[in-house]
Structures are given as C-alpha cells and as structure tokens.
Image 1: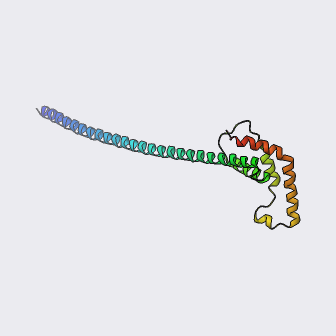
Image 2 (image 1 turned 90 degrees about the vertical axis):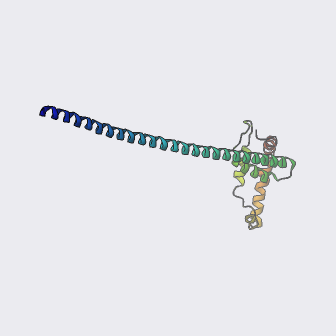
Image 3 (image 1 turned 180 degrees about the vertical axis):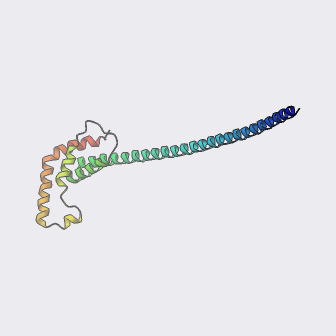
Length: 174
C-alpha cells in the first residue's frame, strides 16, 4: 500500500511537473511568438523607411535630371544665338569664338556627330593669355597693340573655319 501511495503520489507529481513543463513551454512559445512578431514589425518598419528613402532619392534624381535638361536647353539656345550673331557680324569673331567655347564646355546635352568645333578651342587657347576688361585697360598701348595684332591674325587665318563651325551651330547642336 505504501508502494501504491508512493506510486499515485509519483503520478500526481509527474502530472504536476508535466503541467509545469507545459506551462513553461507555453510561456516560452508565447515569448517566441512575441519576439517573432516584434521582429516582423521591425522588418516592416525598416522596409517602409527604405521605400521612403528610395522614393526621395528617385525624386531628387528626377529633379536634377530635369534641371540639367533645362540647363542644356538654355545653353544650346545661347550657343545657337551666339553662332547666328557671329555669322551676322553682330559679335567679333574672337569674342564669339571664346563665348561659344565656354558654353560648349558647360553643355552636356546631345550633339550631332558631324560637328567640327575644334576651331573654337584653338582660338580660346591662343587668346587665353590676353587680359580682359580691367586687365586690358591696365595694359600699355604697346601691349594692347601686340595683342590686337595677334587677334587680327587669328581672325584672318581662321575666319573661314569659324564661319563654317558657326553655321553648323546656327542650325542647332542636335
């Protein structure tokens, strides 16, 4: 009988331990579910944040591209206008060539492949050392005369090439 009591007490203890184990197991499972849920919420929040950042980057890229396109259109019109003015004699050959070269350096839009614009760079390079504006006024008469002769020589030697390049540009860059 002692053995029977001990056995039934042991079964009771075992059931109670099993209950404790199942309660502990449920608590553990509940904790795992909460951690899983928390992880999923964090992943969802980070995904939303990443999408927000991606949209912002996309919008900024689109805006920058639009600004660059507008800038290139404005530069293309300016280049075309100066080329036409150069052809009509409204702007001196050297000044027009330098202005066109500087604008072309800043232009990043499409260009026709048949454009031969090297003459503008050549004239720019050969006149880069000549002072402008107040620097020109500070030169002595002899220095001004020397630079003027150089510019006259460049105009005479390259007029046909400049006129040809300007007529190409007067029709547009693309």
